[in-house]
Length: 97
Image (cartoon, rainbow, N blue to C red; front, side, top):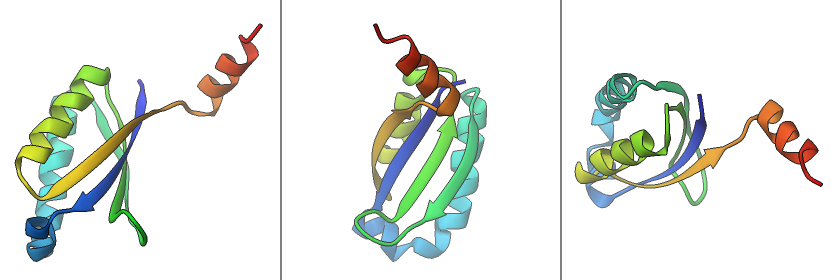
């Protein structure tokens, strides 16, 4: 299943209600599961972003729906990238002419 890395920044609303974040993570994990995916990990980070989320999902469309639905709640802004694991990355590189 494809992997995705999402960089997350809290909005003003999101940081004001940060104590609700554990419940929001539970809800997000349930939404990922309902979309046929899996929340692999979540990191609270320092720097430009507040969180890094690693998910697996069946396809890009499922991830886009999750990102839009999450954004509609108003607590975070996200940047999501398709990630190629080691094995896939090596296959891609080895297939180069």
